[in-house]
Image (tube, rainbow over all chains, first blue to last red; front, side, top):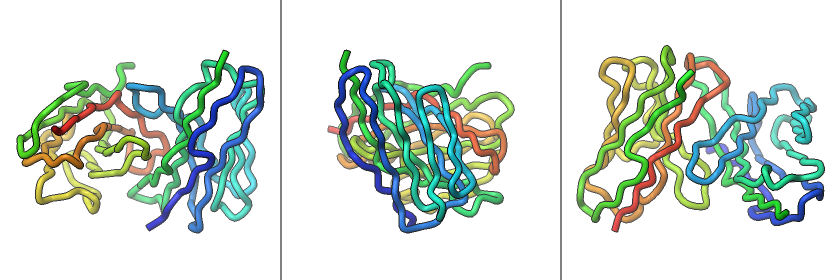
Length: 113
Length: 114
């Protein structure tokens, strides 16, 4: 079983602060995805990282995939209240005909105005 | 483009009762997934369909859970009989193919078993 551990589990910050959340595993993934889930909604894909060491930026969000493809981080610069939500990482296995995702438990982020 | 539709959005039942959830994926998407998300946890895959065939149901509790996608479009997930530990949000997702890297999730059905 491939397990993904996310930290911290909860994070409450003030608007304008920076933050980093982590996603770690002992297993290697072919790719890793980050999702944001808002209350009463399903997760929405933010980014997919595939190559070890890859860095992707999405406005104020920076995603990094570890060199060994076992871990990832999400950094948010100057957080806004609209960034509030549950951030989930999900690793994909061997791909091919079955793109099975294994999700972490998530980091619940609250950005206070 | 319409997203993944699910109904009902909320359901409250007593233990040992039966319940069914419905999902309509994005038009043209061949792959459909059902996930269970217990409070405080990430989604866990229950079953994956490719058209109307089952690709992976290794984590589906088959003694009480069943799912079908008869015509390769809509899908129904059933629980019979429900247990207290089945209280969760049931998410449906779809993707264009089994190898596609983007899954689109519906809003989920929140089930409470009393």
